[in-house]
Image (cartoon, rainbow, N blue to C red):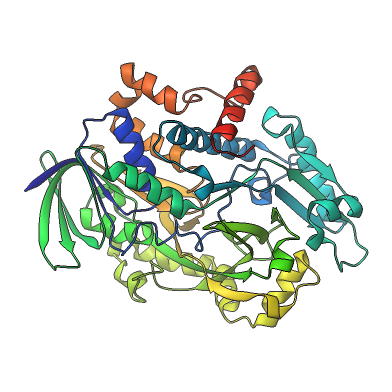
Length: 492
């Protein structure tokens, strides 16, 4: 039986960051990574399967949905997301500095982040949000306008052809567009070149069996059909929609009761150079009706393989598949167990508006999709846009305090009591805060790697580790490390 210190299942942004972090913190680790597809990062991390927004709370109204008793918008969640994304920027900058990644512009590019609202109620909300965020050093560069002439300079498509109604926009220049697929492949290529590490494509993990000193991982080579067993001290399941079935195979009690609620997505994309050249921004609006927070509409510049396009959406769709590539319409039904049957049933009953929204979205005509697009870009023409599939997000369902059937929008890591196996469940803003999420895994399952001499290495990779950047006392420290990261990543 082969042996490894760590087995990573799935070749996306989570496994790539975890593998790179672990190998930098302890170069002696033997790490094996297995991906079932023909290339790494083909699922949720694929460049066309997500919006590529570096989620830092700069423009996403869904991170500031509530108002306090005084009527002012609560901004605490946006501050948390910003701080978590900052750890990602720092690690990726250190990867460039240390030669792990040669050309940062192949995965990250500067694109301003804008929030856009229309109507008096929307303008009032955005004004309050701006006033709350502007007070903090994270958002001190944010600007606000309700003047059409200024918005015309920032993003002309937003106001061309728009009727006379109140509008307002906030803008942060140092936003980012990220190709998480390219980033994942770069980190995996570096990992695979290190001593004691192996990365494999078209290898499917078919079983996980707990043994005295960790896990026996059964892997099938889909090219040759041959099967091998690997003894691993620790297993990380970062297989996107494939995580839940593998977690169920592990049999750990912590996974009991978990279910998966798959949500598909679609984008409208425009590659007309005359239109693309007029819009250089990621523009987020407010959620519509019963749309989930992950379906907040936005009109984005998207940079993939050096070419810019415009992307609008996402439009939801109903699906029972857990994976975009290689998934099966029976995936949802195969995941049903006695322990999660009731949460799944209750989720269906308690989220009828959501289910109806997803079905309705999938049945929409092009004209209906253009109605939503024209809320952002009034002059949009059908002939300039085409519909493509986005990724599939499997939302985690579990019981909390006896209340079953809660759909969790967000990112969650499930770890067994022995700290020998962890699995990632959930979705946005996962990719953007992947470094923070993987640091939580390391703290729990490799606590010795965040202490002593390893801590010095960690601080060289992520200077803000274990520091509260939100504190006013850390404002100058934040500014210095943030500006350094932007320079390393060629964002300024």
